[in-house]
Image (cartoon, rainbow, N blue to C red; front, side, top):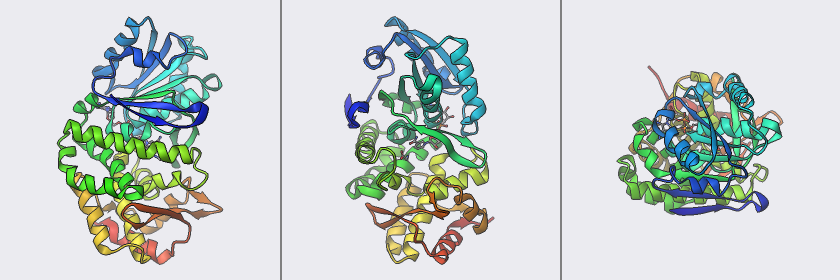
Length: 363
Ligand code: NAD
Ligand code: GLY
């Protein structure tokens, strides 16, 4: 087992990464203030892993309330959140009952927001079971649900007490979901870690083939990158954490524009990264060779590098309700090179329009 530390003074916590960790009740117990837990998962993950975790906790004397919600991004909404509150209340869950998120980013984000708000805040542990959740969403305390008008629009910063990433669970992940996770892994290389980007170019085939050693290193390095950024800018105030959203402003527009769940989040981020790279190129910041290198790596990860043709106007409209809008101006994350990202609102309209036009797929 490898441990990455998220250093946030009194809200610091460990990220445990390793094989067969789900059945280790003592790891969970270390971070639970009471022998009482609500285990929140979805209809796809429950048949695979709910019993293993519930049994491990049960053997350690923990009383467990399972809460199973429908799977899919379209259920990361108010209605499902309310169903979780209904279940917590019906089962008399208390202020010291730990909410455990067992699943991907949808479960982690929704459970985290439930934990932040149920009885004004209860203990929360992340058990991420997708690659995307293990490298990104389970770490850093961003929790949210979607609103029909915009992605992740209602939420809170609320840190977990621990993240337990059992890499064995990646064995049952659908192939498309592995690609979606790799989009966020590649993102770290692009924004701040050029050596990691080069390592990914060397090892991408091993990663898509789910080589255990390659995956473990990619998860560890991603978590180290994320932990450093979150420790430096927990609440996305200084601009450092915003860089983690490379490609996301465009990606969120794709997800909302097509309807949540049509493209996976990581897929939309991949196409969004290519648009951001093209905007950077149109502004004279990176070379055409850099765009080709980025697109080649994403394609080798089996990710889309062209975006759906929503129309430039619709993209601009959807991006206008992004969380990175300040004073009515959209803030973009652009690249100065591979491994160097920055935040700016000064993007000429023609660079944006040209990049969008060059990036869409027309039927
Ligand atoms: P997801 O949670 O929808 O999981 C993908 C699918 O895989 C689901 O159908 C799920 O049931 C299934 N699944 C999960 N684990 C499995 C396993 N081990 N075996 C088989 N099937 C499994 O999607 P995701 O990609 O994990 O997360 C995407 C979400 O994460 C988005 O809502 C996105 O906004 C959010 N996100 C949040 C942050 C953050 O910092 N909070 C960062 C990145 C993404
Ligand atoms: N995934 C972006 C963040 O955590 O800030």
